[in-house]
Image 1 (tube, rainbow, N blue to C red):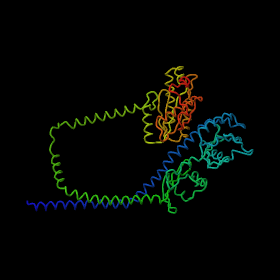
Image 2: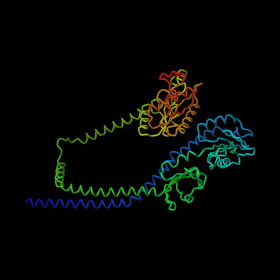
Image 3: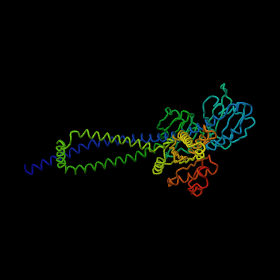
Image 4: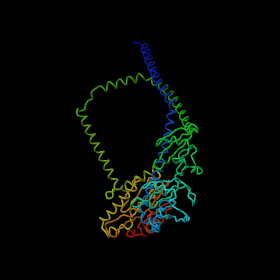
Length: 536
């Protein structure tokens, strides 16, 4: 075959390849066009889901945990009220109740009043407040609502507090005797300001609010809207499901909602449609640019590739022929050996993961150990997560070992650890730091919320009953919130200083640490010279 014939055949082959590449690219362009036409709708749906996800996050991360914790603390105080003390014409043990309520109000900063009204028209309240001579608690909405729902906690309609003008809501429950007769109602007033403070943090041009079933605004970034009817009452009829999102054509706003059926509240997130459309327009322009650029690059690559097509075909053909040849020197039992090696590797991997899991646990208490704590703390700092760190030291633990034996000391550590894990494991990680010291990494960055949890733990430990006569356990603790730029050593130094200060001031208490220089916290010397281990 002469050179002219070879050249002609080669050119024919290249021409057919170029035509094939062009024909192959036509479906790609068609798919790109279809994607471009439908992208606006899909992107709108994605942004709507993000808006709904913002609702979910606020509801499940803040609102419901906040209310559940409030209800749990309410139950603890309610269970301490005895029906015999409030059933007569005069209240019994009033000073004891006021003293206990003062403690709980110090822990629960969002409480305004703690009180009980009786069927005998008696009223006991903290902080103390002198009611009018004609005041009758039985006529109050919280008393009547609780009396209508015996055995249940009820949330009242919000109202402005008479003394200081704060927007509050009451949580109440009736107190009944053995015959089921209402002898009184216990209630607390809590402020709604924390809800408004959490709204509108990540919505840009939009806003969030909480309304009740009648459309009255309970929480809103604009204080002037509180306790007023919502601006769009027609939305109430569209809150048919537990969660949903829709476009209000009149106001051109996307509205995402989440119902809280236990309290007949609705959490609403509102975002102007123009904000979503602007994002869609920018994304559409970017997609169009990418499609055009991809087309140009594809054409250039097709021209370059066609020049080497023949050589590539030869190489591929050679590889195919080589792959069909039987391998030399491979024993017939090779696959069996490979399977055996794979099984051994899988078993080793399983043993490794089990050993690593056990290596992170303290053998005595079952809590996470010091190694796990160090790794988790460094990871939180590296990933820049906001959190709180607490350190707990049992008071007088050396005397427990000296007076009752090390076996009893181990039992004390196990019970204290078990109670801490039950109360705090849903909020973070409880670890044994060493000896009688525990540390807690709390995922919630709100230091006051974490203080409330630790105070509950402290009260629970102090209330434990022990078989040994005269044995009682308390602990002192320190709590600090993470701050950008502060490393692990700095956090541990601050919280350790607060533990030392708590022990110095009388033990059985929890102090909050700040980011001030450590010298202000009176950091103890390395040998614990001011407080000995026996005194601690």
